[in-house]
Length: 551
Ligand SMILES: CC(C)(COP(=O)(O)OP(=O)(O)OC[C@H]1O[C@@H](n2cnc3c(N)ncnc32)[C@H](O)[C@@H]1OP(=O)(O)O)[C@@H](O)C(=O)NCCC(=O)NCCSC(=O)/C=C/CCCCCCCCCCCCC(=O)O
Ligand SMILES: Cc1cc2nc3c(=O)[nH]c(=O)nc-3n(C[C@H](O)[C@H](O)[C@H](O)COP(=O)(O)OP(=O)(O)OC[C@H]3O[C@@H](n4cnc5c(N)ncnc54)[C@H](O)[C@@H]3O)c2cc1C
Image (cartoon, rainbow, N blue to C red; front, top):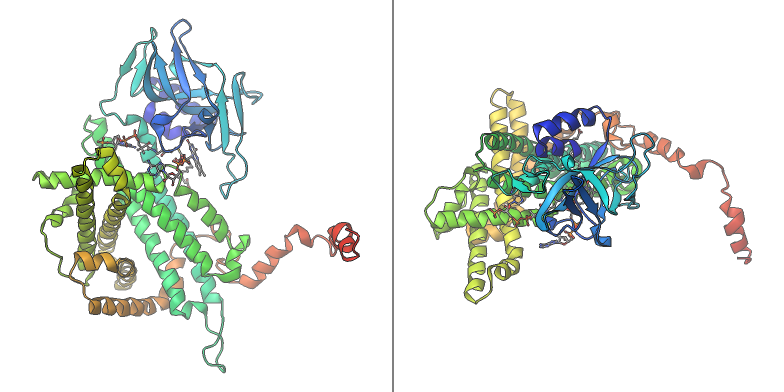
């Protein structure tokens, strides 16, 4: 996050000074925005940067315990520089949060600079290879030039100058990392399902008829139900990640030309796609662990590490709930656009359906299900706006009405994102497989149908509300979904092998390519320190005295 912020928030002159040093690892930095007391509410951050024109410096301070920077990766013991997001004061006026480059340790001795308090925040659920730290300032001075001045400046005499035309220029790094995190979610889910599917092909358990041999657990329908949605989702996230990256690049190019019109849609898309991709990946990685029984609970399976790493992404770079609410904010505005007869941006063009007043005729084809997801999203948004307006009519303020409607707002945002992801998934597969062999086309079509059928069956309640789907349609769809799982089964191992993830990347006794699961589990067990000697010394110090009643 240090380098992307230098690139996004510094003037060309500042980049010329800082970037080469950062890229050459002459300095190591982190991005310190979150505080002990605030992570989501950026405008509530308490760290201050007060400009002193006498010395042409900013004085950094942590006025309260809750103002201590908290969480930044590498902050505890690794970095010697930080990008610190602080409330900027000059001439007695607060201009809100701005980014500053702050040296916190001596480049030679690595000792913390005078006025800097820094340390580790302690053990975490995962991410323990990163020394996330805390940071406090006590009247610590930095040069004026260390304010990152691409979007705003403070002149030598303390005059504040706003440069960027759009108010959220300083949030650019977060959008960039959110876009990256969709790809990270796909990559880590692909690892987990490779591990779980390979293991499920090796693992044999139970024989339905007492004479027969035990079945591969991958042959069980319930195991296929657990795992094939994981494979389909890994592809869905990867294709949406590529699509979002292009949207991000196009928006950046437009902003460089001074056109910020597509920024709100990019923020809405990056928010909900980051939220859903990280939440789906985390829950499906845990589902992969569940599918591997006891051995999935071993650290040597690689699955606990993957879960602990990915579940953090649901929180950092914008908590799941918060980001969906950002998307909901954009959707409510789009709804009002439709009412006013104004044109809509591409990803919300389907919202006009919300005004037909009719249920969408059910069509179980892939395109029909995608249209159903769009009708569902439009219907949920319409119902949410109705609740919002009912509360406003009761005399509540907009903020109060909004807060009371946030459960529905989040539901509408999730439905919108599912519709966007489904549309992208199918259209990207069709675009990318134009020249593919029939077999590849068939397998990838089977996977996106698993995705569509799975989520349609997960959302039958909403489909009954907003489409003409009937009980028998749902019954038929369930049978079709279960049949599709059986069609995929023969190719399942080949499909995860196609992720082409080396053993060194998987780090898994269960998922290694050679399938020698039991030998690897035993080999990993031998590494346990408890196996260093036949009798551990605790027998003599605790167990034996206890058994002799002497403890
Ligand atoms: C958005 C908030 C929640 C609210 O902000 P606020 O200022 O109050 O704004 P609002 O009033 O809600 O809205 C005002 C308007 O501004 C618009 N807006 C808001 N945000 C943005 C934005 N980002 N872009 C554009 N527009 C924006 C909003 O729509 C409103 O517009 P309008 O008025 O409706 O028109 C805000 O508080 C917020 O964002 N909070 C979340 C805080 C957050 O995200 N914190 C993150 C801290 S940093 C962090 O967590 C870092 C984590 C690092 C972990 C490790 C990262 C690993 C990277 C993985 C990738 C690895 C890739 C390489 C792998 C390899 O090489 O192998
Ligand atoms: C592994 C990891 C690495 C991190 N790395 C960094 C880093 O390098 N740099 C950095 O600056 N930060 C980092 N963070 C911090 C991260 O950005 C914050 O944790 C995140 O932004 C969430 O903020 P918070 O922790 O204050 O949670 P809070 O915002 O306090 O959320 C707590 C709960 O309150 C809910 N909530 C909060 N506000 C609202 C609201 N307005 N409406 C409804 N519900 C609400 C949330 O949904 C959540 O359920 C990291 C965090 C983790 C876990």
